[in-house]
Amino acid sequence: MENGAAPTAPAVIVAIDGPSGTGKSSTSKAVAAQLGLSYLDTGAQYRAITWWMVTNGIDTDDPHEIAAAAGKPEIVSGTDPAAPTITVDGTDVAGPIRTQEVTAKVSAVSAVPEVRTRITELQRTIAAGAPLGIVVEGRDIGTTVLPDADLKIFLTASAEARAARRSGELKGADVNVTREALIKRDAADSSRKTSPLAKADDAVEVDTTDLTLEQVIECVVTLVEEKRAEK
Ligand code: DC
Image (tube, rainbow, N blue to C red; front, side):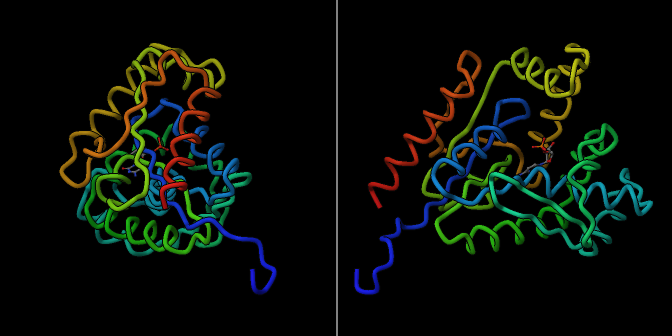
């Protein structure tokens, strides 16, 4: 090359959607790290805005109150897959966004159109600024946020497998309680009016029920490499 710089692969945009407990986060982070891409956890952004609403006394049962406040918090996501970060108005909220209270309220907050417009804009800006490309995980990435993504993956798994994985993450939480909570949240996320959890028509569906995390990562890495080779 003229200036001696290493040849660079064209930026690749990967959308990974699916319900909770399908291995989206672990897979997305590992794929991004392995391929030198940025990584964005969009669920963390919805959790962050929910955390801000709860902390600031917004009634999360009132969509009008949520809509009126949707533009207030400044949410910043760090996109290094080895150390993703999330701050709200400069405060590190990586821990507080994982509490039961936020988890219980995030579906209601993320169903409000003003919240989705705000967060979707943020997501598109981050994706457009990723130099080598990005893996973006969520619920509506392939359908709404990045409909022109180079590769769309939709991860699924049985409710039993998803609950077992989440209980493991929550260090021994009751599997049946976790299963009911997951089913309830997925139903809310799938049935909301604005950009619900859905598989894009052109997404590749991967059922992870009987696969190890390593197998899922390998499968997605192969699919991304194929797309890159086509570009
Ligand atoms: O991935 P997660 O469990 O951290 O996501 C938390 C919630 O955020 C999820 O229940 C629905 C919402 N969400 C969304 O509405 N759209 C996205 N793209 C990502 C998450």
